[in-house]
Structure formats: C-alpha cells, structure tokens
Image (cartoon, rainbow, N blue to C red; front, side):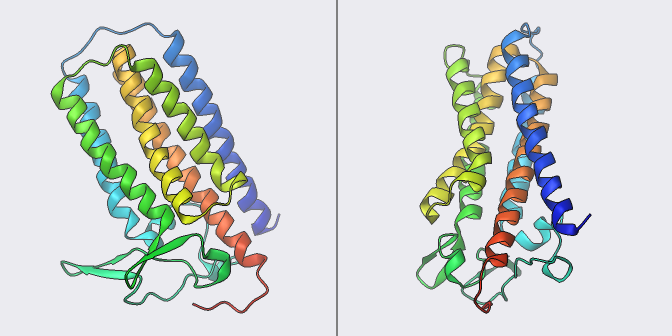
Length: 246
C-alpha cells in the first residue's frame, strides 16, 4: 500500500468516525433523560473547555509543530508534498521573544485564497478563523459557566445551530473552495458550533459524562478538519505544474 493510499484512508477514517460521533451525539442528546444537577459540573467543564480554547489559540501560531500531531508528514517523506515556505518577516511576528507564525502557505496562485494581507503582513485565513472562533468561545464559555445563566428555551436551537455549522465546517475542504473570507468564516463557525452543542447539551441534560464526550468529539472534529486541509494542500501542490516559490 502506497503512502498516498494510506493517507487517503486515514482521512476517510477520520471523517467517518467524526460523522458517526456527530450522529451518536444527536441520539444521546435527544433520547437521554436529564441527570441530577451537580455543583461541580460547570466548573469542571468550563475549565476543561477553556483550556482547550487557550491551547488551540496558541497552536494557531505554531502551525508546523501543531501539524506534526496530525497524521500527515513533512514534505521530505511524502510523494506529493505540500511545500512549506520559508518564513520571513511578512509571515511571522515577534512577541515576547517568541516567533509567532501567521502565514505558512507557498506564494503561488494555487494558495492565493488561503491567505490574506493586512499591511505588509500575511495571514492564513483558516488559522485566523480558528483563532477568532477560539477567542469568542473562550469568552462565551467563561461567561456562561460563571454566570450560571439558564438557557432552557435556547438549548434546542443552540444544538441545531451547532450540528449544522460543525457538519458544514468539516465538509467545506471537500466540497467548497472559497475565498479567504469564506475560509475565515467556516473555521470560526466550526469552533462556535462546537461550543453551541456543548452549551445546549449542558443546559438540556446537566450530564458531565455527555459534556466530556462532546469535548472529546470537539478534539476529533478539529483534528479531522486539519487533516482535510493538509490533504487539500498536498493535492494543490500535486496538481501544480509550476516551480514552487517558497
């Protein structure tokens, strides 16, 4: 079995279990009875989810190191490589001694919709979408769990919104090739959709096990989204006939 075939099968596996997880979550949310409320549920879930949002926001600025967690390897070991560009001052920003990376696509026509510029700086549209979603989610989940607000009437619409945006966000790399603004929006709404499902489920069931299951699904969905994007990047490079400009 070639490496390309293994890579495609891995992506197919991730997409399959992500969709199965989504279906199972919908069954659990609408058929499980509500549990007795616990005073420790909200602090545990809020701190866990907030930590994931913080780690996700940090990972946005270290895309090369973050991508090693996902199955795809670096260009030296793949037959149809996604060529990582050299990082210059337009793609990085120094922050308290750390070099933050916010642009990491090759400078070619195939990736023109994957990045955007503000001034002289280049930014990855997908990563910035994830950062926006994680930032809003961090503030929202903190406010929700600290305030003890009840959203009984909004629980079902929140879950419906979450399922729709997560499904759309997962499938976007497969079926839709959009401009940078679309990539920003779909990635941001993917994260916000995850939060909507969690908040709706927590309001509906008061079940810490279900909440933790949904948080685990969030990590799976994000991993799948990254894997799909990486596979899409490699296919762009594989179909390109021009010499890559790094």
